[in-house]
Length: 293
Image (cartoon, rainbow, N blue to C red; front, side, top):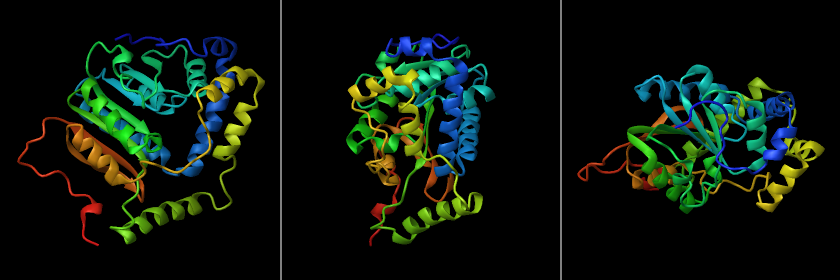
């Protein structure tokens, strides 16, 4: 596995990256991080907990980590800041976000961006990994996948993760409202109360505002056109896999032996799964949607 520099697996957007200065790319990423923080007041705390878990369980100072739905590389950079000997393969299918990450962190040792669609079977094999990954991580990304695509993606992760390796997914994952209505209501309410405490007057730029601004930048016109060609949309259209039970069931089916939440504020949680052989005599985890109403 190549560990140095921003080696690529593709050439999409290469010309746009060459024209985009690191300073301009980082300015857009700073705005990206700020608008993300508006929706996730505990975003940095969740990043910290996720990286703590990688450090605790990697078993080596130079782990190989897959960042799934990496966006412009916000999590990958924080992980490398803490674990500079690590190799992070950052995977996304959005050419604009990938180009920002590549331009901003072109000289960052240990970081490699990969233009792959997690919904298309074979994406993991296309990464060209030379050894099994120690962890696969993601934040605020996998809820976009349809449940069938999510299950297939988790199953494919299991083929490139070492036994005992971790899948760490930080996302807004809610309880089943029909089975646990009070827990579902509290999960949402706790986040809303924290948002109000931290930013009673609002946070500034919104998700929609950021996308409107970045796609209007003439320097990114080619990448914007490529996003449209790929039929990627920046607007929120719900969360097909936003329910906690959907992830737990898919991870268990993929061969993860332990699945549970290791950090949480309301629905904002860090879900951890440990890959390993499941004892057929052990019942799978009970989720809230299995409780009688």
